Image (cartoon, rainbow, N blue to C red):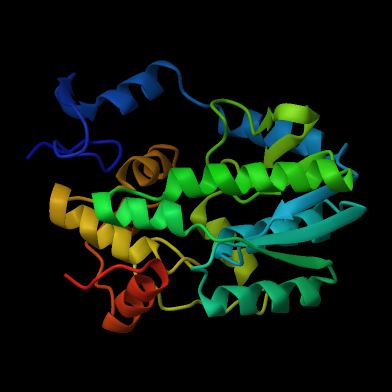
Length: 273
């Protein structure tokens, strides 16, 4: 099986061509023609953050949103900041505890909003699909409405991948979403986490907060033979934000404990297979 020489795509997940004697996926070929200037993205981010005076942090209690909250408060010193967590009904208890503990540690007001995303998760599991895009889209819309209601012009998120070549985008209503971790490596993020009372929950899949991700990945693996996280993690490797070794580990088939499957099935009203 051909594997891309630059990222972690292989023939299961992408079209691979031989270019100058090396296997390269189509996404890496585009990247090599139009590379992202990571330093330029970071400079643009620094300039933008100088203007941010009031913002909410999209705060899931996972490692990346925790780093985003830390940077917003301690590095960029945003004058008015609120950590807003959307509990979609299947957030790990440890994630909510991490969120509360670290917000208190940093002295940032914390708001927990509870919603039921059972329709998204049930549909994804029944079809062996990823729930992540629909979940993220709904969450960002709820945060956008919350920002407009409260008069916050910025939403800060913990995404590592920028919007193309820029670390921000303009949302409907004039709210600006800032991907504060744009082009920040995993090593840099872990160094920040060491400064905080963050406790890593033992959850299958590339997550530190969501209980449905592991089961969804397991079902997707059964049907497709690979992870639905492949494309995003391949991009992290391509941009030099994650090591290939770490990426390969994160893309392995997860082993979901029975207690987690039982909780998810009961929450979503699904019968055991």
